[in-house]
Amino acid sequence: MTDLSAIREHMEIIGADGVHVGTVDKVEGDRIKLTKADSGEGSHKGHHHYISVGLVAEVEGDTLRLSANGDVAVLFEEEENG
Image (cartoon, helix red, strand yellow):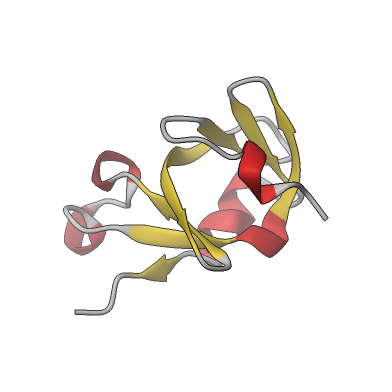
């Protein structure tokens, strides 16, 4: 498992295919909170989304790489409740 303490604010999140998925806001428990600017389009825009830390493959410098392709990782995003 990836060392979660290596995940920092403003890191770029990319899928296994190199596609930009989002930007880290912070880690909350077992989820990575994305910045609002990178949290979806249309009705999803303007509130935070989350990605499970279980999708993290590795942390390289200022980049967090996921084990799933970008289009698949977006399907696993969770919306903020409340």
